[in-house]
Image (cartoon, helix red, strand yellow):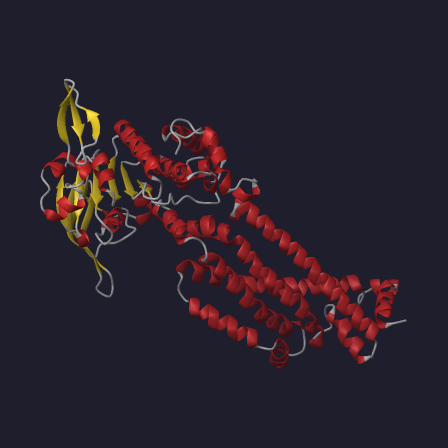
Length: 243
Length: 270
């Protein structure tokens, strides 16, 4: 039996699907730490990115920060935080938050600042407050790009969250580390397959969310199946002289 | 009434947009500021609703300095029409028109009903109300822009080259529509354009601007056509252009107006 078949057999073993260390529990743990990391990163990076995109000030900061953050090796960061906070979930969570922030920051900034300046200026000129411009105009129009940033961050985090098991008994990474230690490569591969499946599932969910946001908020006209080129069709509906 | 009291605008760095501009816009009249780019005409318009702040002088509405008004409340009390409509692409036509009433806490249902009535007023069919701006032609978008500006029933309308981006035929229709609406409503309109024909067609009063908002001449369209103040104005209004130089020829007992190229363009009523 080759390794792949062994991994599938490992996955098919009912014993691995129950109990405290079972696959469902570990998947939930993995999702929980991913959600927590992306949630915290979003709470930091979304307001910051939106504000920078709205004011168009501090864009240089975004470039520098996301560039620098991408160069940081998460494993090194994890070791560092592990030494600082001690063994446990806290260190992994902080490392994952640091990993997630740049994508969300860049996405929200890029989305907001790409909204047509004339539209924003018009919204202001008719009497929208800055908060109404942000929540009523900029965010809806930017939502596909903003969600794209969260999507990228989530994918990075869900893959990297395996490292949480490096300093805590948590998540799907446990299968990788314990498999490595005990030379149980079937278990390791099974763990990797589970992480990959989880990442794929999240990717599909986010793609759907992005499509929904685009059709619901950013460009609803398109979802109605009517394009600019249809506008000759609009003419007979108009009274009086054509314009 | 809108008053500009020696208004200036200098950008940081020393670029001058407007220098010492003074003008009174009487209520219920249409005043057209006409000038080429660099004349500061749009900047002057934006000073009325505080989208631009003067660096010197004051702008008064009915005697009150606009600088003392809350900018958001001020803007909601003034209708504003922009060149490219400035419609919100993610909202339907009706919701775009209802923007300001909804901001002013008019119940959405009622605001939409009023918006539908406004569609009619600007010459569009109610069925367009559920469309999105990108599904309309440029001219239709401008009509919606006018409807949005009228929605809160403001006394003042600011129009910043509103018909500049549509083709000439549609522009004529929109101008006629605006003249009709203005005859009904009698708003105080400040209209900015670089198109002299448009200025002469729509303005009760026309203000010809040089660079930096310096007034070259102001007067009724007839006054300006009859007596251009100087060569700049004469040049700008194209007083020497063939279509402005009309002569009368008597043919078969009728007076025929003929333009500078000798083309007959109309008959004088006796």
